[in-house]
Image 1 (cartoon, rainbow, N blue to C red):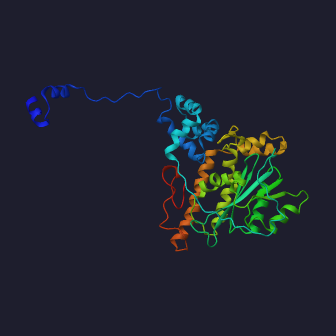
Image 2 (image 1 turned 90 degrees about the horizontal axis):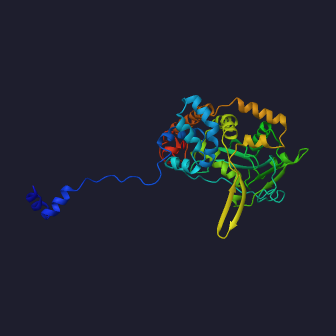
Image 3 (image 1 turned 180 degrees about the vertical axis):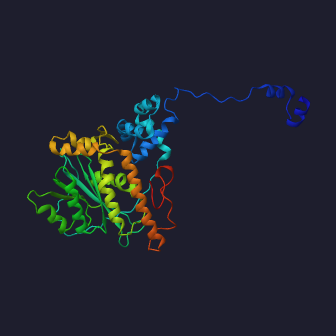
Length: 382
C-alpha cells in the first residue's frame, strides 16, 4: 500500500506514513462562556414580537413581563428555565435573536405646501415645556403606492407628545372637511383636552376649516406649524407613521373608497387599544454633545396608558375609565381580530385589482405574509 501511495501521490514513504497515521480533524471547541440563551427562546419570543407589532429590543424587553401571562394562557405554560430566561434576557440578546427577521422599505411623501394662512399660524420647532398630556403633533400618510395621482386612502395620525398616546383615522383624499370631522371624533374618544396642535405645512391642515375649528371655541387651541422641509420638527408623529401605519398597511395603493370605512373601524378599535394599552414606547430625556458625538438618554419604556395613569393632570374619573377599558382587553385576542380585519381589507383591495381597476403598481399582487420572514411585498408587508 505504501509503494502504491508513493507512486500515486509522489510522497516519500515517511511522509505518507505520517499522513496515514494522523488523527482525523476535530471540530474546535467553542471558546468563552457557555451559551445561556438558546434557540428554545425563539418560539415564544417570535410569537410575542409579531403579536406586539415587532417593537425594538428595548421596548420588547419592557413588554415581556406583561405579555407572558397572556401567552401562557393561550399557548400553555412555558418551561421554568425558558420563562426565566425570557425575563432575564437583555435588550442586546433579544435584538441578536430577532435580527434575521427584520425588514424595511421606504414610501412617498404626499405633503403639498399652501401659502394661505401661513402668516396667521406661527412656526414651532420643538416642545421645550410640555409637562402633561394635551400637546399633539399631526400628519398624514399617503396610501398611493408608487404614484400620488388620483384619489386614494390617506391615514391621519395624531400623537400626544407627553404620553405617546396615538390616534389614527382613515380619510379619502384628505380633504379639509374630512380632516376636521375625524378630529372631532378623536376628541370625543380622548380622556383629556387638546391644548396645542402642531402640523406640517400641508394643505389638509393649513386651511380655514381647521383654523376656525381650533379658534372658535371657549378655550382656543394653540395651533402651530413646523418649518417647511424640516421633517425632524415633527419627529414624534413621523416615528408613529412607521410603527402605527406602514407596519400595518404597508406601501401598496389603496384606491377603493369602500376601504375607508374598514380601515377606520380597525384604527378606532383594535389598533388603538393594542398600541396605547400594551405596547411601550421610549421617550428622550436629554441630549448632549460630546465633541462630534451626540449622547441621548431615554427613560424606561412605558405604555401611553401607564403614563396617563401616572399624570396628576388626568382626573380620577378618566383614570378609572381607562382602567375599566384595559381590564377588558387581551393583546393576543386583539392581534387575532386585527389579522381578521386585515384579511378582509386586502381581500377587497385585491378584488378591485382583479376587475381591472387602474393601478400604478408593477406586477401582480403578492400573497399576504409576515413582514419578518422576507422582504416587504407590494400588498401586505407584515
